[in-house]
Image 1 (cartoon, helix red, strand yellow):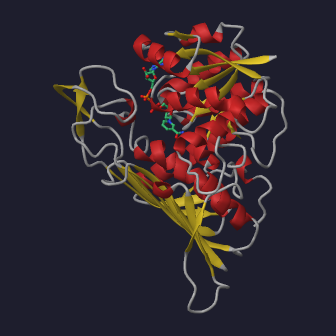
Image 2 (cartoon, helix red, strand yellow):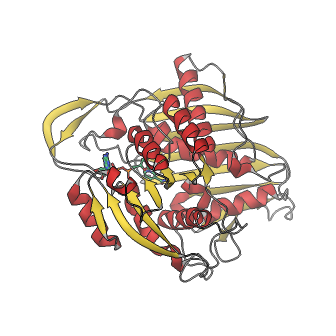
Length: 404
Ligand SMILES: NC(=O)c1ccc[n+]([C@@H]2O[C@H](COP(=O)([O-])OP(=O)(O)OC[C@H]3O[C@@H](n4cnc5c(N)ncnc54)[C@H](O)[C@@H]3O)[C@@H](O)[C@H]2O)c1
């Protein structure tokens, strides 16, 4: 048996998925069936062709329907603009494919709900890529907190600082369209939101004090195709930015207080998800700008010697042993590795291999809908002068088994 895979979208994150499928059988032993790299789908044939060649896929397709129609393709990543997720995901599920969709699940709650219904009706695996759950340092902190070593969680502070929009001449793209909340909040705020829940062990119950701002209100129209956050040649024509460069809000995780800020104009931070969690018996903190380590503070340390200690990530922490070609202590990890671990977990489930503590299955579409409901509550809070806004009750799968 072999699993035929395809990636729809050859952009920034699509290349991460393509590389991850290529690496999948080389991670965590030899239990995975053969993985056949069949197609990269991209409407831009040049992008599709280049990615297929670079990552060793047999072909590229300009229309995703050719992937849906191919009986030799079993599992597909959907890695295109959020507004395109629903149509493609529904088409793939109807064609009997296993689907791994990028976050956020969609650009509207209605579409996200329809996607949950489609996933529930399908007999195949439908999962969402909440990649930062796969960060070894984040998962290590989660294990420490969930073990009770730090006692009760008191409060959480999280940021996702990025500066990909700092340059006013970086061109308009799908990322700048949609109302307030569909910008930095949906793009990077979606990540820090599920990470906040993963670390505190509790789902969001409400948000308050939401504030959005847009610093660069129009951007040049590109003269060619644009991918990811990269710069591109631009024309003289300008187009309106419709969404947030910055979003901030207070959070309640079922009794645990928190604060979250995100930005795409945070100069000096190319991409940095970071957080601090304060607990009864100590604290822990992480910054993506130092992916290979985390910091831990234990109140039990001797008076005069108390302080944050730095712990280098290694095989004693989640994902590393067997997950890296060189899995020795101090050998670093990065965001690309998160896609490797994530897509391996997806293929493991597709192949019917058991979920292990070392490699939990990916989050499901209900989790993706919940993530969008958090974003929607922040939008509602922002629209009502910061009023406290309830987040619908949820039990995300990534909190499974955590008792705090
Ligand atoms: N998990 C992560 O860390 C992470 C990181 C970046 C992006 N993302 C998510 O991945 C998705 C894509 O983001 P990106 O930055 O890679 O986008 P991108 O703009 O870099 O790439 C999108 C690609 O889709 C192609 N495309 C457009 N319409 C298409 C269609 N109908 N069929 C096939 N291809 C089409 C474009 O030509 C482009 O190559 C988004 O949902 C985003 O939120 C996730």
